[in-house]
Image 1 (spheres, helix red, strand yellow):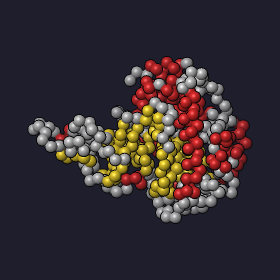
Image 2 (image 1 turned 180 degrees about the vertical axis):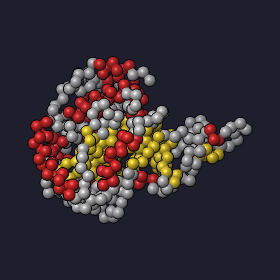
Image 3 (image 1 turned 45 degrees about the vertical axis):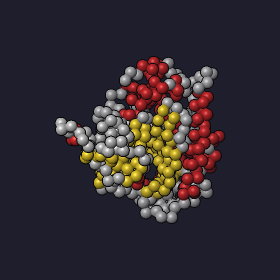
Image 4 (image 1 turned 60 degrees about the vertical axis):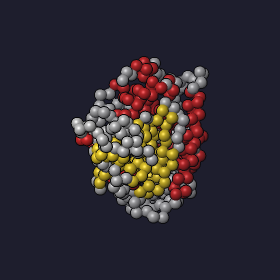
Length: 410
């Protein structure tokens, strides 16, 4: 696809300033985003707890695509385009369910859970069922998270991209985790606005009182949205506290380390572990736990992990629960924002209202401020504005975004 609109506007973008309004409003640029950015990334479609039994499925919608995620065996999860090979009708119309085969309701063509065509009535003698199976979508599972990739050719190597995250995911016990709660916050804003809002904490204090109450102010300034999101002097001021906590957490078995991918990376991953508010064991209103310890933890360590698989998928894990954030582009000014709260697979007595208190309120606030941002950008008076020193990660994201249009491996 031609990238003329994006490339032309990128040439005029000012470093340290927000983007031209067309990046957030233009249908042609959104189409280029889908082709050159979104469709080439490994994006988390959901957690395996949604498809624990053979025949369990759910639909993952991204852009104009509907993808069937279905378990076909104890160790196999498949992903297929939800498009019948007969005349293109949707096969699955319910968002989730359990089936023994995938059957199109239009003309009753049916497919096995492996995608092979099983039955097609009254077809000509030269029709070959073996050539008419469902179109596959790239799919991989990593410690319970189901990743899909819409790339029509070979996608970027999955193991090379995410292999260094395994020890962290294993420690948190995500492979055996279970879903405690899900909530959708559909947002009438371009996907880039949703991402840019999430990767800066300049707005945290004025916009998110609940979130801010659970964290040390100095941590929010230094690392509120990741390792390189805050001013350098704030980072230096907070480092002694962070290093002392890292030593305590390591003594309890937590793997250490950070990841801060630059704009030349394929997925712009980020991994940051830091303290929560002093005296708090969990990201709840009063700091008391909402569930039992997750994974391989031996005790509460008063810390949390922020992991970004890509700008589209983020994970925040406190000691007793984790939250999966999915930002899925659907239309030029519409993004699906979905949150999934996870607890340890053996947890039985967990408190959903306590667990969801902070991030439910914070995400509702994000929805409002991002939608207001989108409406303001539609004004003829909008001009790109200067970033603060607390929005450094937004600049990194924008540089990464422009770079995707020249990549050969993404």
